[in-house]
Length: 288
Length: 322
Image 1 (cartoon, rainbow over the protein chains, first blue to last red):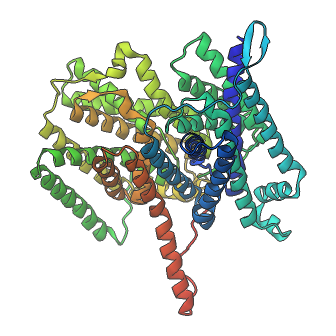
Image 2 (image 1 turned 180 degrees about the vertical axis):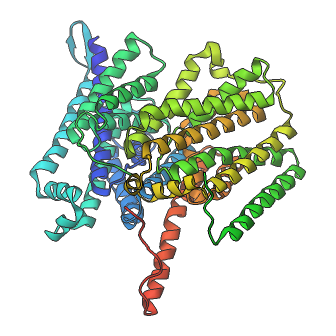
């Protein structure tokens, strides 16, 4: 039971990290970044191949992966998303879906459909709790996730950049009047999201079978976390992510293990029936 | 439904005739080019039927649905079960369409209460949940091995012509429908939901109707797919199918039904020619999708720059609505 909850918290960490990355981009560019899952996959595969083929130590491979993923996110923003800022949401969405198809096709081509193992950066047992050994890796993942989320929250609520980002997402025109550059806000947001995608990849990759499909599935599940949390709220995404992670693990163990997506669909529909704007969302009319 | 007569009705009739003649010519040419081309072009017709529904959904109801593949699965399995129970071809395809429409209604009733991205997120969850349910309900659906429908209620050649016949019927009906009062209402809905509501249009009911219609066509397409391949397996109806259908509609331009013919052809041809390179099809389709959105805008911007340079100011709007 304890192990189940810990495993749930680990999956919850993935969902929370990915969902917050999606929100950061959503608030800046008003688009659901379909390519976010492939950013995570890109970082994981890059770190893995640097570590295994080029024999770089894991921390160096991870560092390079973070830098490369930030660059990839900035490139996507600069080349496709920012020039299309006046386009309809539908067009923006389609462009990020296109980027996602290109990246996932590339990864499928380079890495095939075989499962790969990402090394654990923290082997061994952290501590024993009620007769179950809690792996150090899991504890590290959960704590590191909380640390990353803490940094993001601090960035958003304690720094001038964060204030600028929140102001721009509240009202782009007014924030321009007080001297906030929408271009800079958008770039920063995508950079932060890229870094978060890479962080999610490194923290999570040891706990999932690494294939090209893995991350599109994870992204669909973090969509669910995002919807549960109400789409625009950082806290909502984190709470939604952890609720979903723990709930899914408990459901899989006690009820039925082969219908995870159906469970998630039912939970999401159930919550949205009661609160159509999500748990922490504000009433806002979103239209494509 | 009263027909709205406009001054371009002659051009419209010419367009309809051109569409029908063009489709017939393509169908005959592909039929003469051997079994392989007949198979591929049959597939294009099936995709096009499904995409016509999604075209109305995306272009007019402004709903981004990522579960059309799952609705196709519903139709395919509904039709396959009917065929195994001894239904003839007509009964089977009617069953497929009916199951698709009902599945659309079942998804639509909860999902259409949600707006924008919430709707898209729920439909993508439906797209991953349906194959799972098919695998679990293996007593009915045959699980991962699927269901075989042989002898098929239609021969290969017959199913090809049925697919093209249905495509022509659906395409022309949709073009005609868009010229009626209902079509005018849908055009207004595409422009602005608020304006449509102000004009007395029941937005929720229209969206539901369009969603059910798209489910009906997806179910019909699924049934045709089952007939063509004489087999249904859950792995066909994955998320990628739903995404490719969306890609086809976006490529087609979303404004005119006839665009989906082009989009479907691209979406069918690319994977056909890249079967031995698994990742190449999504890679190419992704590039095509990006290009289809950025290039027209760059083109328009170029024209605008040219116009400014010539001393004029505007060549149509360079920026779409928000």
